[in-house]
Image (cartoon, rainbow, N blue to C red; front, side, top):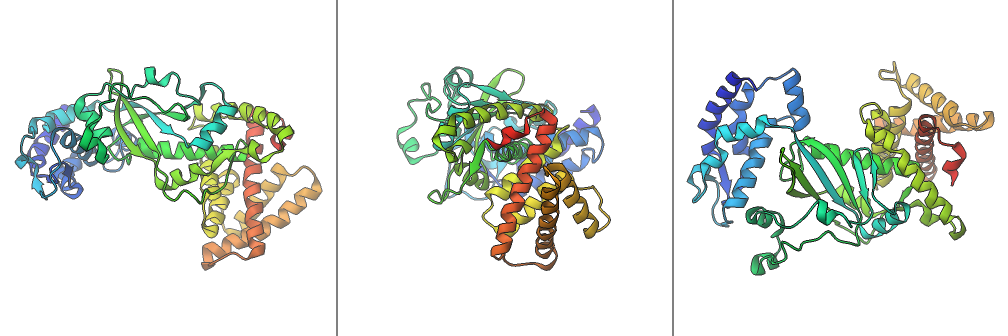
Length: 439
């Protein structure tokens, strides 16, 4: 950061930060933090490399999001909850040291970004069991590390021995914690019956998991499972017995002195609800074929490393997997139909088609010639795709309100086409034997 820029930011923040408002003695009011940082944020460059880096590391309002998160963390770790206190000025809070959020200290931290992260996602019991069958030991898939059993995690990513204030902020959330404390801090362990995904990121992660690294983590999870749907590694079936599942993301942060557990937030509810319904594809095959299906899944999940090791190069395939995940796990048929079409358009479409008719012809021809095994199947796909695109146009342009039985059948065919196109693209990329995908 240029010294002149830093000086101007420091002067502006020194004037405005103390007047920020806080509820219940520990919750900074977002709107007041926004206004407290608004003038300072206008001093930051609005374009160029530094601006782009801030967008990548934090988001559209980098200074506001950073200051809001630091305030929230400092208040919760140094002040006690007071239910009757509302809209209190920051500099009026008893026992709060304003030097902890002094402009120079804030800007030192802001200038040191990006920080490195390992973000640990706990998986549900049934999916954990299936993952252990497919992957018996730790496996790295590019920026995703799969831990089927947390045998080594207690030593590598310890949950205990945290500073008292942070431990209380992260773990003492239940009534029993407030009443009896958390005597097992040093002995806190990862759950042995669970599998975990460890994802690598860089930037800045806030208290609630809303900054850009968290958005990228959500997208990466959806891409991973969406591609696994297409490769028949996993399948999805809605779990109607689980209404509101919650899965934590434990955030280990490295500011240059080693990783430490810094934040815990919950996965977005839509992703959490979808993950509960994911199981191994091998569960749907006969017992005599399960061994081969598990072996197939093990090989194919390893093949995905190529994509996640260079996400920029293979962005279209990863984004297609993301949209397939949304389409597959979506309970709204109309939205699912559109999402599946977007998946195909990402893989097969042009950036700027001249009109609807041109786009439709482009998609159906590319789809048919890519995946058809003979001329007869090619004609079938061309005919089927025309019907599918007609339904898509009625939804998008006429506001079609529901699908009839025939159109639901076309939705099923559309999802299969998405999977086949993704599999074919991966076959071409990874030299996978085509017949293997039918395991």
